[in-house]
Length: 239
Image (cartoon, rainbow, N blue to C red; front, side, top):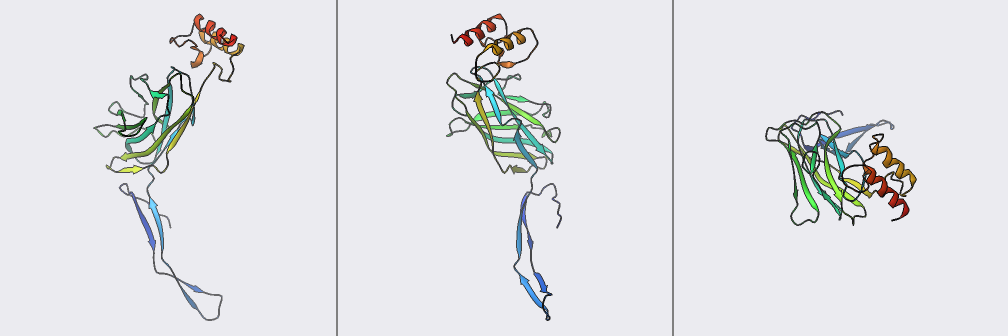
């Protein structure tokens, strides 16, 4: 049975009743009365995801957690609870906010990130607009969360739960599953776990404009220059 949902459908069930069959393997017909069947049906208008299930961070250096949305319906709102591990916090990004917008969101869309009362390190993230602007496109990164680790951060998980979206019909839909981003600590420029001559060469390449490695700012002053080369050499020496 092939069915189609109208734009305002959320969930219900398909019930098949009065199921009757006959046994053709015997000489005399035998009527078989079978129990009715119920099939739960739920509209799935969108699926949230993460561009990367694993994110590398370094103390004091901002990082992005990219949230994707694949949607069949026109979506105008997004909401989720986000729990950060100890030592990881939100920070301002290129837009001067904790959330970085993509071109899927119009200028009318505003993101709010507010602490959830009674829940440690848990926040409610909401994206919406008073004009109910439809999110552009049907797939790809919708927005990014800007996070930064402190010096004590050892790694952990960023968990997204209670994810909901709303459509142009004023209906909200729950996403069936949560999302988890594994956040690991980056220790060196080349991210191989060891400070060696390769890290020094990589810093030199970035200082010359030959690479865009974001971890080359070893001393964390916002630029990559001779000071970072000296800092990388000190790391290799164990100083």
